Image (cartoon, rainbow, N blue to C red; front, side):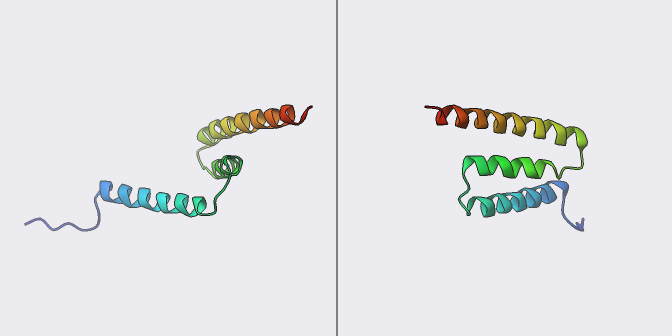
Length: 78
């Protein structure tokens, strides 16, 4: 008979994913706009320890934020 101690890697991953979903749901419960979600993603990406991943995500979010700024400026011009 085999006695398991602790959780398997798959079970730990499932728990981690569930926790992430809970955090995402908590954010979405506030009803953020798309722009606010992009800013949250940008700010969270700055918290990453992996510098390569952090720079890549910051570049992507900055690109979208810059595009949105240009669109807003064009919409405000009569």
